[in-house]
Length: 202
Length: 180
Image (cartoon, rainbow over all chains, first blue to last red; front, side, top):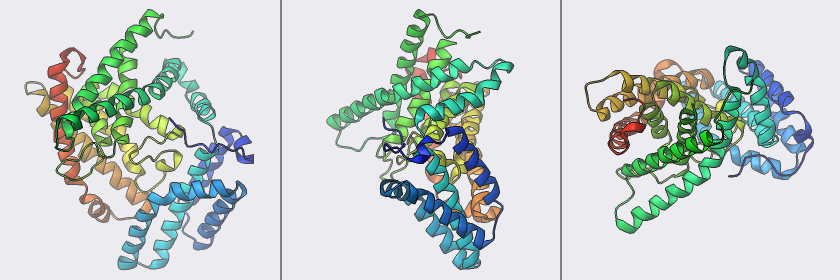
């Protein structure tokens, strides 16, 4: 399964993941209440410039990630044209564009391992109140491993349906898929127990 | 412990797989994403707590940068857009669905799980979605409801489906359904 990270290395890839997350959070807290068109326009320009420093591939990928959003923004703009002022609609749309593009930028330039490390760092204090953070890390790894396996089994179920029926696949196919997930979970639990289980590390 | 962990992990994977198949739920010819069906099933099968944990695990992987949302979306951008409210509502939706399926005894599980999915997976989820729209798009409450209203019938069908699927799972693997 492919993560969304850009493969080529850029200067932003080398910035620590935690710093990028912190910068993104600050940008959001600052931008969300702002409705001054000049500040919003500047934010969009800065975001675009940041993408531009990463090269053409980053610009293209960033634009493609925003594509599903554009339809929603067009609807919002149309709504504002009818009910309120176009300027207000433009500010709202550009603000959403800047926020989503900035968040995407962090995702595009941070490897899954580095993001996971940030998550583990954030979760670490929860150990004090008895949360088994090692189990969370194990669960994350399990899901990443299980998605392609379950996806493959789902594709086989779809093929079997198509081979048997001229009708389109219906909701019933969710039943065997969920049963496969339950059976896999049971086998995995046995395997984990056989290897000593998920005891607390301390 | 091990069984809870693997059930939570596999159902997180199930949400992802249900979202990865775009034509999975061509129900009466209308293509609707089965992703929120996965959220409802998490609650209905695993119960309130484990169901919510499975959804949180799924969302964590989306935030970490895996394109697991329906239509191949993902990453941190999904958590700040106009429809982000739905994502924040997912774990609560699973919790409420599971809580109702756990506590409404005396009826067939299909009925209690379906009712749970209607209240948790539609009513509660859309409340979160509407609040998200109000915050990000600056809509008034009636405007947000009007904007989302068109999608509610499809999700109500999904809630009924979630009930039927949960009932079928219970008949096939009675010992695995944690809400009974």
